[in-house]
Image 1 (cartoon, rainbow over the protein chains, first blue to last red):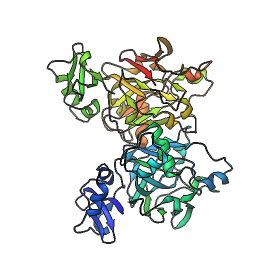
Image 2: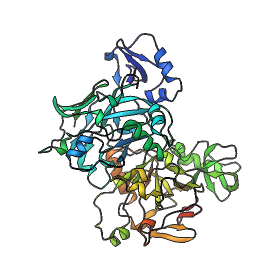
Image 3: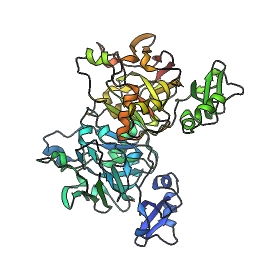
Image 4: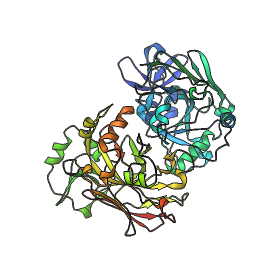
Length: 274
Length: 274
């Protein structure tokens, strides 16, 4: 099952089930609100009526108001080893705000105060039930689904101090979507490819099977110190190929087309604008 | 004016004006919700009726559901210079979650997974109006008020990776209160003292005039990358005297009484429990 948050012609936001015929609205303002209903799977599966065509809606972030967004840093085995670093014992974690998110096809504003804006394709995990000091099996069962994100990062701000947060949380710079795919239809451990293209040129291309900390491991670890709730979001890190790691470095410029995709979920297409 | 969020005998949470006679309830579930009303000052000033005595209420965090909590790292001049470091060009920022907060007199659970739990007395700033790419004058006008916080930190988790966040965001470990004091009654630039005592022994004692990045500077800087809204919270950093910096290091243990105070605002009294 694929769920999306759409904005309809009258400007309202709604959770929707996406299938071949289009988007069926589900009576909740976004997928996060839907997930707070214990019967969300039945409710989404039972939806019918006239579907809205893709051209009739705009995609919002799949979850628009997560209470928590946690992001893993270095988490792709090949990339860590090629950098000559040892595999980490613990996940590196930082955060974003709900205001950091933007839709799958929205323009991304390039901050006037940064000239080192970089890409980071990531698998996003949406939490479906509360997790408090959970083990990995419980954490796996709590996954509502998966989406694609790009943790667009202002490297100059990220590296102004030891803490990355200020370069990771510029408003409306992290596209999230295009839909949430439920675990019965998508399993990251099966090794789907994750990619970034900039103006059609492939910059990142790796396998989700290369994650050092798997999705259940990340969720269980986070739940050791803070509870996770339905609609919360975890970004799982990015593979090699970011702009700052290239020789010479490459950064995003006005007019660039940033495409981020995970096979089996979909593609984000975002234009960078001044 | 002093505003607090109290829990009444029937278990409900309410914003209240605190004066010599007690707590006058204000018809909002917490001070954060109150601040989202443009007429909050008039509404709070006009409140009357029978005040509740301190013994009739429990103190909740002054704001219970901030959408954003940003915290400054190294920000006290004396402490930075005594450590032999240069004064920083930019504030070091990290975040907490609303779930990280707890009340001014609540017990603080010592995480079973950490044996390096430390204190950090901080001046907390509560935002009263929206700030987007604001200058310092606008930021100063947007301060709703000030409170006391203790950024209780799990040093072992904080230092597991380069990013501090996982040691700073254990649920219910950051007391915030006892009240929010409005800027007409409290000015941090006047140099009030900030202190931590553990079991009666003074561990931190410094002047708020020693902040490298002032309150308006911090709010303006943050608003460059993310909007601040009424009820959001900014913690301004801690002075020297933390447990990890002592010889030998000292950490919190079950039964310890942690007192955190800012002259002119009040004192948090929290017992550490297993």
